[in-house]
Amino acid sequence: MYDLCKVGNEGLMGEVIQIVGGKTIIQVYEETGGVRPGEPCVTTGMSLAVELGPGLLSSIYDGVQRPLHVLLERTGGFIKRGVTADGLDHKKIWEFKPVARKGDFVKGGEVIGVVQETVNIEHKIMMPPDKSGTIADIKSGNFTVLDTICTLTDGTELQMMHRWPVRRPRPVKRKLTPEKPLVTGQRILDGLFPVAKGGTAAIPGPFGSGKTVTQQQLSKWSDTEIVVYVGCGERGNEMADVLWDFPELEDPQTGRPLMERTILVANTSNMPVAAREASVYTGMTLAEYYRDMGYDVSLMADSTSRWAEAMREISSRLEEMPGEEGYPAYLSARLAEFYERAGVAETLCGEKGSITAIGAVSPPGGDFSEPVTQNTLRIVKVFWALDAKLSQRRHFPAINWLNSYSLYKEDLNDWFTENVAPDYVAMREKAMDMLQTESELQEIVQLVGSDALPEEQQLLLEITRMIREIFLQQNAFHPIDTYSPFAKQYRIMQAIMKYGDAAMDALKSGVPASEIIKMESKNDLPKVKFEEDFDGSLNAVLAKMDKEFAALGGR
Image (cartoon, rainbow, N blue to C red; front, side, top):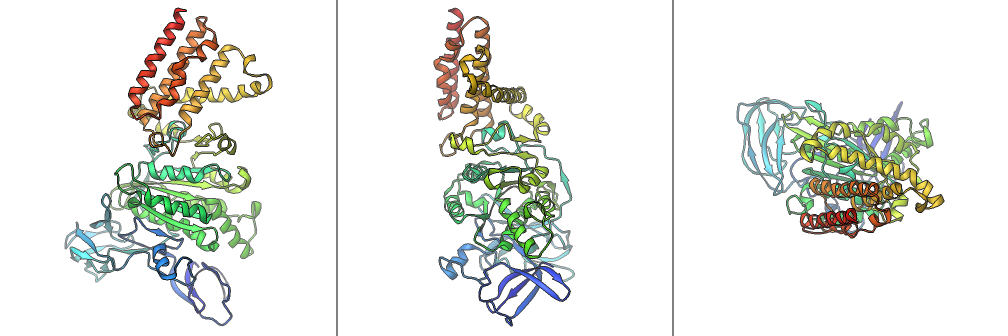
């Protein structure tokens, strides 16, 4: 099972997916039109595996780790079938610096040397996890990934590259509990629904609600060292945008091109379903490889719905008993296997690394009750629900704050208290309570209008409008507002709450709500988040607010 085969005269790549007696069923990764009875079919004796070594970063692969730029050179603008290409450049020279010495006993996963892969990423050359032994000879100097750099006493020769089956998780010493948040710079994510570094999250939403833009923002701004972006079954136009945009993006952490710490796996919707299924495992294996070096990795899978549809197609061809909506009965198990490969881990080389898995889900018609969304919800701990109505109102990110949740909040509260502010958690909970109350009041407002509400509730609606428009809305394309550090997030929310508390006090002292809502400083507050001198602008607005409230009190 799962052996790779070469099918037909063109040597099309395929995978054994079922064996029935003497009959073998192969799912070919490419178009099979024109393949005739009698053409050869040869097994390679190996399952689908990826090449792991220096040169992965900055690469753009298809679902089975064929570099797209190599395929472009060989076949032109349209990829012909039967073309194969090595995952790594076997001719490129790398400078290898050994850290292990002759006579050292090295176990699987331990570091034997390093290579400077990009300006900021040091690539650790590790023993393959399934090998160990005493070093008889180790070299330093310039080598290709196929050159022998180390020989063990039992005669085993090691290169800078090794292969690993994509469906088999790479081993670690032990899994650890996530303790730190993944800092994304997106206020609604960091502020209300944080994901832990090494956690799992899902972004479900209908077409056009902003899944791809949200994942691109996470890729660009998250405080991870490596990004693996898997376009699994997405439309060709969307993937083309990603492939054009990513190489031009600047990494805000280093000022270098973002591609220097990114691997793209592009598997469009017109590619065969087996390759679509393999692409998710390919991306996860590449992420595990860098985690094993001790790096924090973020894995974006866009979208797991297309992956599930591929499983459904294969399952129906195998005449398996269908489950809900035609998906295979093992859908939940396969999703769990994928997300369970994420997490914080103590690696075999003694380092601490993490994979944060964020999967987009594309439910047909935005129906969150369909099987892929529901099974994903049972597994992941963070749910960022995109809402078509919010996107139609041009509220971005279009994440519905009433349907979304994070199960990491309690685990991360101590971190927020120590690293952001002692009152940060209480302020977040207060804001969530106010937004919940607002949704209940909106039903009354739609019937009788806001003027029929008591003045206290009118003020509450105004404060929650400020939370929505100032804090939750964020412009991904504005050079300043695109990223909001925790200090800025805290000060924005603090300013809104300061206005809210002072407004309620003024109302109790007899000031009409209409006077409080007319204040100029309140209208100046939304502009502050776009200012380069944020602190100076905010301080000026807060000072103006104090004067206006003092004048109201005097009146």
